[in-house]
Image 1: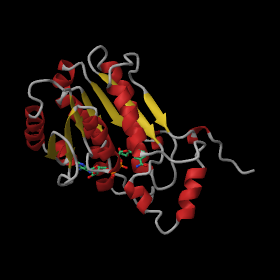
Image 2: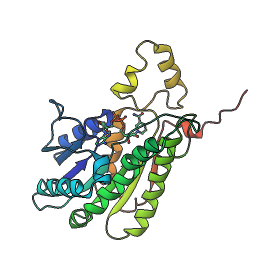
Image 3: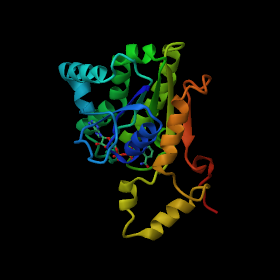
Image 4: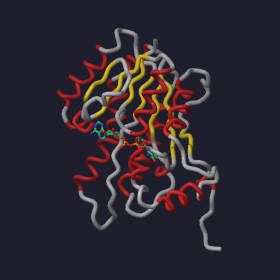
Length: 246
Ligand SMILES: NC(=O)c1ccc[n+]([C@@H]2O[C@H](COP(=O)([O-])OP(=O)(O)OC[C@H]3O[C@@H](n4cnc5c(N)ncnc54)[C@H](O)[C@@H]3O)[C@@H](O)[C@H]2O)c1
C-alpha cells in the first residue's frame, strides 16, 4: 500500500494522523524527535530531530536515506509536515535563538523535507500537506514567532504549488483549537474556561484530532485533483466571527 510520511507523529494530532492512515491500510512512516510511543501502530518509526535536519546537512542526508530505505522503492504518496513548536513571547522578549528554532522547525524543515523527497513524491504522483494554523491569519499577543512561521508556511504552500505545478500537489490546513490531550490538560483545573472556549466557536465546540486526520486523508486520497495550493481553514467558523464590543 502507499507510503505516507508523518512528522510530529508522537504528538496529539500526529497520533491521530498515524491512526487514521494506518487504519486505512497505508504504509505509515512515522517520525518524531521522541522515542516511539509503545502504542503507536505504524510500519516504520524513525527518531529524527527536524531542527538538526535544517542545521546539519550530513545528519539530514543520513535521515533522508533512512526514510527512502523504508519506502521499498515505491515512492511517497504523501508527506505530512505536521510537527511544530510554539514558543510564546512578545516583541520585547523574543530572542534570536527562539526565532531560529521556530523558523527551522515550522518552516525550513517542511521545505527541506519536501525538497529532499521530491523524487519519491513525483514517483508516486504524491502530495504534500502542511499543517499550518489559524495563526497564519488571526493571532493574539505573545504569538509573534509562531504566527509568523505559520503565515510563512501557508504562503510557502501557495508558492510551492505554483513552482511544482503538474508534479506534486501541495496544500495546507489551518486548524483553530484542537482538543489534543495537551490542550485539554491545560484546562483540568478550570473546566469553565474550556466551556467558554467551546462556546466561542460557532460550531459549539473546538475541533478533535480526528477532524484534522480526516481532512488530511481526504486531501491526499487523490479524489480532488483541482485542490492545489489551498490553505483550508478547519476552525469551527471562528474566523468569521467579529469580536467588537456590544
Ligand atoms: N493543537 C492545536 O490546537 C493546533 C491548532 C492549530 C494547528 N496546530 C498544528 O498542528 C500540528 C501538531 O500540533 P499538536 O497539537 O499535535 O502539537 P504537539 O506538541 O502535541 O505535537 C508536535 C510534535 O512535534 C514534535 N517535534 C517538536 N520539535 C521537533 C523536532 N525538533 N524534531 C522532530 N519532532 C519535533 C514533538 O515531539 C511533538 O510530538 C502543529 O503543526 C501545530 O502547529 C495545532
